[in-house]
Length: 88
Image (cartoon, rainbow, N blue to C red; front, side):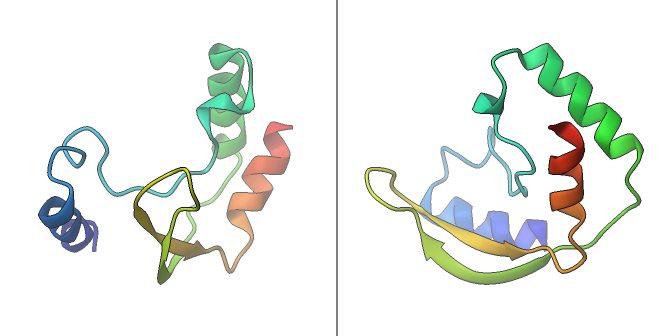
């Protein structure tokens, strides 16, 4: 699926794909003032997590002032939220 998504992204925004391949964001870099602490908390949280599946939903546009589109992602098992809570 990633290859299919990146093929579409390459068609519309070829300069972005090599440095930012298709992915699901679990935590944003600006959610902690200390990147090392963020990495440490994330590593501990995922060490306690079992593999999980996400579902791809509809395409959406970012709100202004951001430009672009993204695929919404559904987390039916709540695994992402568990990881986020464990990082708090």
